[in-house]
Structure formats: structure tokens, C-alpha cells
Length: 265
Image (cartoon, rainbow, N blue to C red; front, side, top):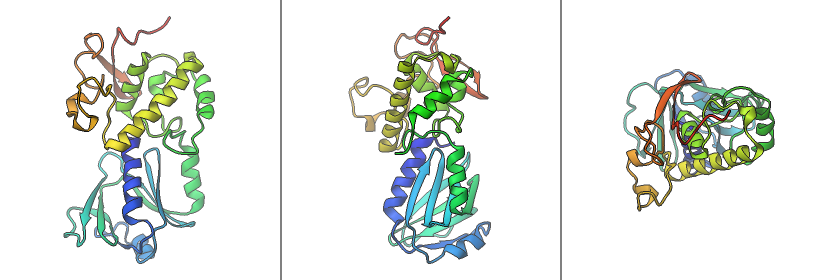
């Protein structure tokens, strides 16, 4: 499933490519047919993201909400677009570009009230201007749940997925099973800042990169997939060469270094 950086990058690109334009909207598959007919020929005002959710704003009361889930995928075309491939839920055609959306978990037309409700059920998104780290701190400081579990909870912090949680905790030297309420305020502040910085890097390069820029002596954009991460699915720790351990935490496999991320007593 795409993590938050991917969704914010899509929102950024689609805002540039389609917002302010009169859009042709269809549903070749048919499952979004009635909604597409309602919006076809309307002007797209904006595209925004929160966590792993995308919102296409046509008017204050007409918003398309998309959650890609495990299988959702956008295909971008230069106009004229080719024939739809597969079960295309939505085809959006702008002035110069088009996209096809296949296989999303959620694709629905919502109003302003539901838009607010979706935002309110999500946690703080470090990539959103209205994010409130103090609210997140209050939530974490009261929780006995493992920090590695909380980081996957989208109602606590939105946009962090399995890769980012492993990388963030490794870089901070925090054991994934540390109860969240045992983190100091200093540790939390570092976690919030690091998370935001890593997500911003992800948006910029359209991929998750967590290693130090000087580690391989080449630009981040030139890193191979095997070089971009510190701990996730790595065999040995990049810092101390200790074998990386993995186990299930929050129903997902976590990766950590037992030497660099010791559990505090």
C-alpha cells in the first residue's frame, strides 16, 4: 500500500496537471458511472491529500475521495489517451494529460460534511500545514501501546506505513516495542521532525529514502533500491553490521537492530 509521501506526490502532480481545468470524467468500468456523469464537464478546483487519502475538490459540496489500498493504481497519459486497459474505475481527461484509475479500495463522491469527518478520523499528518504535533504528543504520552504499533495507526499519525515506521525508529535508536508513554518529550520532538523530513524527501524523489546522503557518495536520485533504506528488509545493520531481526508487530513485520535499538529497562 502506498505510504503518505506517494499520496501527497500524486496530489501535488495532479493539482499542477488538472486543477483549474474543465475536466472530462468517465467510468469505463461503470462502477463510478453516475458520479462521473454528475461531474463530467465541471471545473476541478483543487487536489489535496491527508495521510493515505486523496481528495479532488470540484466545489464545496462535491469532492471525490480516493483511497488506493493495496491494488489501486493511477496510469498517466498524454492526450489523446489510449484505450482503457483493464477495469478502469475513473478516467479523467484534462487539457494536456489524462489519468486512468484502476482498482482503488475506495472511490466515492462525498460532500463537505463527510470530507470533514474523514479528516477528523485521521491522525496528524506531518505533511499537512494544519498538523498539530502537540495533539499527537498528548495522545502518545498517554498510550501504553508499543510505539511501533502506534506509528501504523492512521488515527494517531496519518501517512506513516510499515517501511517508514521501521526506518524512523532505527534512525532514532528506539526499540519498536517501547511503550509510547515511555518516550521523552525530546524523543517525541525528534520523531516528529524526522518523520516530516523523511516524508518530504519521499515527496521530492517519489520514493522512500532514509540513508544519509553521503553514505554512497552519490546524489539521492541515483541511489539503487537496495541502497535507499537503513533497516527495512536489510540483512545487516548499516551502522554496526549486526544481523537485522524481524517479527510481527501490529500485524506487520517490523525490522530492527538489537544492538542499535536496545529495549530500555
